[in-house]
Each structure stands twice: as C-alpha cells, then as structure tokens.
Image 1 (cartoon, rainbow, N blue to C red):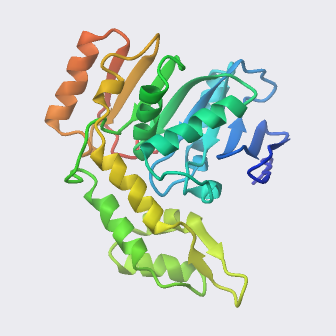
Image 2: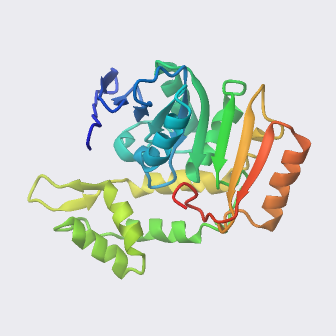
Length: 288
C-alpha cells in the first residue's frame, strides 16, 4: 500500500516496523493496530481510532491522515477491534467490557501516551465502555454517531442487523471475490457495501477461492451487547478532566429526536460535554 508497511507478531511479543510514510503496524499482546504520524513530526500523544462493526482500523486512515497533518503533535492509532481485521484471534469475552480491556492493554504497550479515543458506531460504544471502566485516563473522547443508550429493538440499525443475518447464511466459499460481491448484491445490498465487506475475505489455500473470514457468531455477540448496554452515565458527568464530544449525523437514524434532545441537554449541563449535529452527514460521518 504505497509507503505503508505492515508487521505481525505472536500474541506473546510485540513487533513494530516503520515505513517512510510515517506509518507503523503492529500486534501487541492483543490488538493489531497501525500508527500514523505526519511526515517529520515527533508527536507527544496519540489518539485511538475505533471502527464500527464489521470494519477495520484502516477504514479511518484517510481521515486520520488529515488529522495528523493539521495536528502533528498527535499520532493516530488505527485499531482492529477484537474479532475484526487482524485481531480476529484475540481471546476473551466478546462484549463491550472485553473490548475495553483490550484497549487498556494496548494503551499500556504503546510508546506514546494515549490522550484520547475516537469511536464510530460500535467503536463509539466501546470507547464509552472504556472511559466508564477506566475513568480519568483520557483527555478527549469523540463518539461518532453512536448512541450511548440501549437500543434493544435495534432501532436505527435494522440494516446492520440484516447484513449480519445475511453473512450468517453465506456459502462456505466463493470462487472469486467478484462472486462474493455479486452474491451480496443479489441479496438486495448495495454494491458499495458488498465491496466494503469483501475486505474481510480470506483466500482458501486448499483448492483456491475465497471465504468470509470473520466469525459471525462473535460479531453477533459484540453487537448484542452494543444494543443492550446503556452508557449515558459514562459522560454524565465525564470523569476527571475528560472532554466528551457526541457527534451526530444529521441524516442518520441512530439518534431519534428524544436522544438528540438528551445529548443537547447533557451538553448544556456539563461544560466538558459537547453535542455536535453535522446536518449533511448520514451514519458514515467520516465519509460524508
């Protein structure tokens, strides 16, 4: 990938390789991650980026590049959460608390101190769980179109649940990547989504072909806890000196009118809580 270099290690060790583009990729005791810095910069702290369900850390790479270019004192750490990307084999509980413990272990292994976390969708709820379970450790929290409250009816995320159901019924293999894409499109999903899901395909060594590489049962467990857990208390009030930003896509259905009102009321009561509605954005805020 151009000037980017990747590296892997066993879960017992830690290995980092740095490329000319200012990107390093590593596996610590738990999570696979990449570190992005501005060319020639010597950042003093890092910001963790957490992707949504079925995603990978690299989903936020373009946005992170812009951020470190404008704020070179920060490094961006693009994390593959448990059961995703190259963190598929991370052991432990597939729930928000388990994912938060992974982040604490990653923080302790990083060279730069972690000053903040940005989480989108499922990753936003992981970030909220982290600051609730490890209060006072961070200075900045950005929760991107992720409702802190519980949604047992999956309201606003019915499409995500339908995609996970589709993945649970996939054939065991496809001859080619394009066959996977055609199958997902044939099930009524847009081609852009099908190609995004295809980033999680694995090549099959025995006989060729590809298969979807994520464990859908683990994804369902993580998503179930995401919908069941209420974490408004993580930012009401925010612990220590944490500055919390609730970022809402104006065209997204994740926040209904009552939830938006609650976020804005929370921001009015706490000077370290901020509610931002980006009117032109849908759920994929960083893309829109």
